[in-house]
Length: 273
Image (cartoon, rainbow, N blue to C red; front, side, top):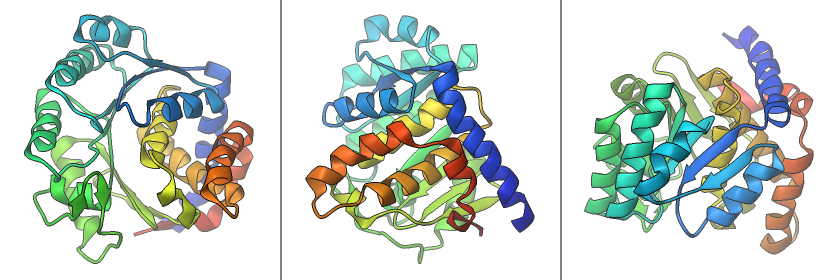
């Protein structure tokens, strides 16, 4: 398997560069806290963001999109209706759907919203932090507010990810100091990055937009997810500074200038589990 990593990284780099060529339209149904940041990030890497939260237009808006991102950071009954309607259109048209179950495990309503989405239709990629993923599996995930307090892999997160991937027929991602990614059979660990990323509000939401943008190019789901994860490690390392204010600004600068060959050359980032 190790000998496949260079090929995977080459494909991941090519997927990254395709975003600027294709300029996919990424429809976000997302939270109010990170919405501007997600729009900035989507534009920075060459895709086009659109944000629309009403059920009245979510189906029509999704029909014109290349990928759908559903983020439950600030959930409501009205948003859920829009999410379900857009998801139905996406599934019918073969549009990839990324679900970010922000704060899953923190409240019964958040759990209800995510469970409803997973029950109603297909989700291509599920991306959450380790606490959210463990909670989604019914195991003990430690979540306070929307943040994970469980930032390690001691609870056999790999097994949990594989089980969820097979259950939902989706790519599963668990983010943390090291990120884990699986398609239910093969699992890869992505290392690197800067510890400062945890101090940026909505950093996980931004990552979701980055991955969704690559999904919008029609790239393989596994490759697109790796591309986004490795890219985020690289840009956070390059952006690190003395303070989180300048770090936040530089995140967008680095997203704008990152090239696919930088992803292709990051062999040390990936390891099979």
